[in-house]
Image 1 (cartoon, rainbow, N blue to C red):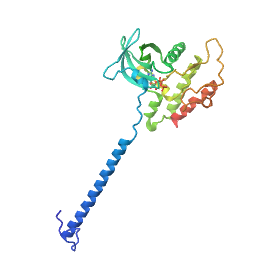
Image 2 (cartoon, rainbow, N blue to C red):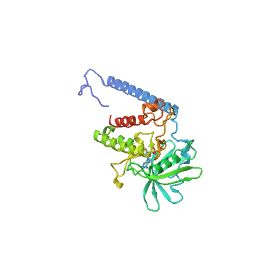
Image 3 (cartoon, rainbow, N blue to C red):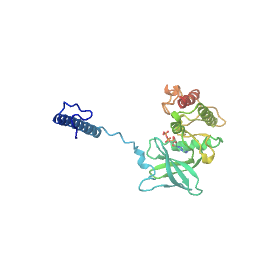
Image 4 (tube, helix red, strand yellow):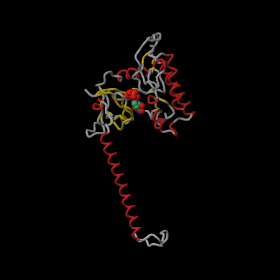
Length: 288
Ligand SMILES: Nc1ncnc2c1ncn2[C@@H]1O[C@H](COP(=O)(O)OP(=O)(O)OP(=O)(O)O)[C@@H](O)[C@H]1O
């Protein structure tokens, strides 16, 4: 550095050697600071290495799922009557996963819900029965069950109508991550109409929550329809031509705690009287 005494910003009484000394001290201090920074970073790295690893999100039943995007390219699933080509994953549940598939015979886009055979209690077989029973009620809010099948020792599957994004994921894409009042009211009208159709068919859903409802698809002209999904926890409360089943006095908790009615939390059966509590709760959750 060429700094002459008397030059701009340098007082005359400071000699070149004094300036050089000062500069050397400044450089030394800066180097020490750099070293300290490096030490700190190294410590942080070490702490990072020592941190306990987050538990793997892999579930035991994942090994049974179709290996459609792995080396095996197991993307063609066969039922007794059809072939289905897996084209993507739509969602994951506690017992399996849902895939977008194309039916080979007519190239129709459908959804395939898959459940491992190694789960303690199968929900899928029950879900298939409910969907079949619901098909007698012609409701715009129900998906249609097209086919079912299994892959030995691995999984069971149901093939149903492909719908669009679920109401939880849709909410996260909204400005400020919430629906407008108008959208909330439209959703209320649609979800309540769907649930009323279910009750007319003699079923209680018992797991009402945003991820279990989805809008339709632009390709099918059903963007403004809300569909009900996931019938695994449904309970029949009435049969055609017979009385309502008597509610049980006590029953274990079913559903999702965040959205469950007060009665369900209290350990009472998911009473018909408790049903109206849940939709307002989750609708408020959308809007607030
Ligand atoms: N027919 C469908 N069309 C399009 N997407 C779907 C369909 N069925 C389910 N999905 C997607 O997959 C997600 C999980 O589906 P579903 O709730 O039926 O699975 P699940 O295994 O019962 O889940 P959970 O155990 O969390 O209740 C849904 O939130 C939705 O996003």
